[in-house]
Length: 71
Image (cartoon, rainbow, N blue to C red; front, top):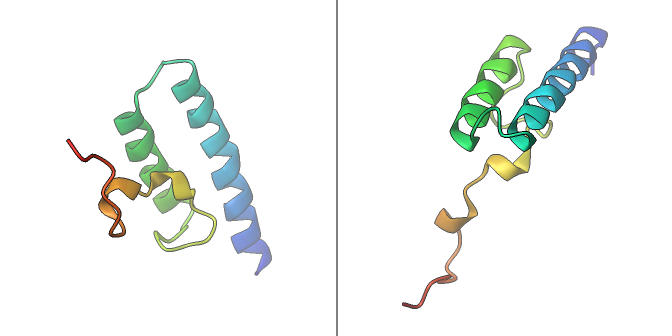
């Protein structure tokens, strides 16, 4: 990891902490959070497949072969 990439990751996480706090306080909703996270990732050149992106953005209801609702 280059110093420039490391700085971008650090800035990305600092920004991500701010929008997570806004989500927690109810200032923004989940859709706003997802949109803001994408903008921040683009700004700091964090690819969509990067290990630095949060995994909670993955919609697990669309994955796998296990049925969650039998009704």
